[in-house]
Length: 153
Image (cartoon, rainbow, N blue to C red; front, side, top):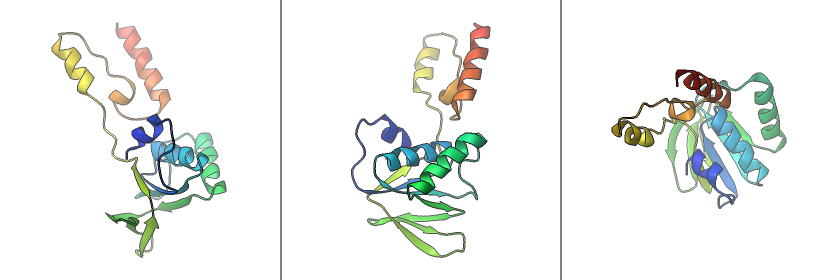
């Protein structure tokens, strides 16, 4: 399941234990969303810190929330494989660790959605790419890009 599918769903995903693969802003938001719905959450990231592209204040709020709700935080990991029992990783010390999961949410490697753009361009209309269709980031960038596109029009 992808982060977008989780966040778009009206009901919490099935199962009790969830591993979120990807620990930048979207991964942290999805992990908090799932913890709020009573899931046992583990979040993983290859990098050394979670949510490095998130503002300092919001980062602290989210990370404190995850810790307070018992989320497993795993940084500096190497992904080995997904099994029927969960996600197998190498931790920071190089030890093999199985993170139990009924569901694994992919919140890494997001790419812009471009299908609508191709349809509009095919009709000969000018296209302004803003927000996540330009590059998945936070709302501040989307608003700024929208503002700039408005001036171009």
